[in-house]
Length: 248
Image: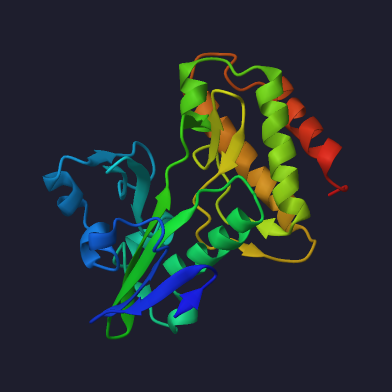
């Protein structure tokens, strides 16, 4: 069965959704590819710094991938198992929903990672899930770039313009922050981690996206040397956004 260019395969405990053209043939549709220990035993695993400690980079036969195990954050993580979600049907599985959104955006040439594989494992009324995406080459998170030094105005303007493009297409990123925006050495901006993201009609969610990003930047900037995130930087971002978007 194919879904948005991917192939769905039933497993003993759930299902996988894969891009057969991107997977190593002998590993296609096996649970091993979602196990960090499997890649570690092959010397092909590296941790991703930041986030919730459940993401890794994989270098497999010349391929560069990012593996993420879904975990809860915020206050709810204190009240429930970190990686278990209530089963509400396959159409509501978070990894599959993110896969479909990424596949749609990637096909439309948006700067997002290509989805490689996703899976869920169901146990009664709950499930766990994972996703593998293509790693965006030569790119670093905005948060890491700020720790390295001061970003020039064109970079901030490019971030704003890219976010405007997503918003014009109705893409609501549920957790837009400085960790989920990447820039490469050419200044190209990409957006990652679209868990709970969706396509929706115009509304106040656009302003909420930007406010969330601004809070993230203020939080990061507060722990860094002076000048890493200043009002002029945010103004440049907003200017780039306004040049490419209708009014909020």
